[in-house]
Image 1: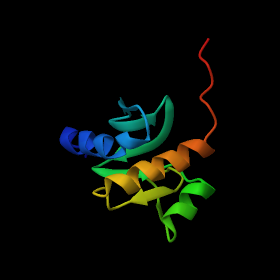
Image 2: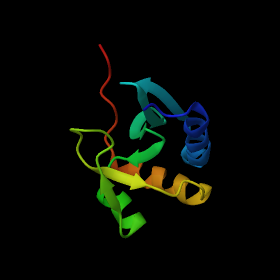
Image 3: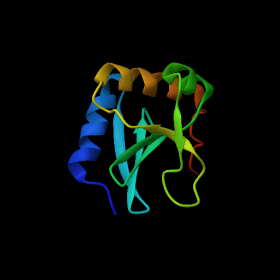
Image 4: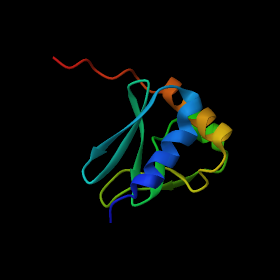
Length: 104
């Protein structure tokens, strides 16, 4: 089951306070980026964020789930309606992630 385009856009809008948000279709679902860094996935109308210590600390009791069969666990974000919290989570997560490698 693929994600609904309206849900994908809603999640991107909710994260937009963190920076320039972009979604890219990949493997039938979506990767979500902030200022060029991939920080999460949207799979089957569910939002997942790469696990970082900063993200786990921000969330407190974080629910960890794999976004698809065979994947490592990500932070599962069930409540995407709080725009400020979403933007803060994206900011703290991206600050802990390395810059993407430059393509040759």
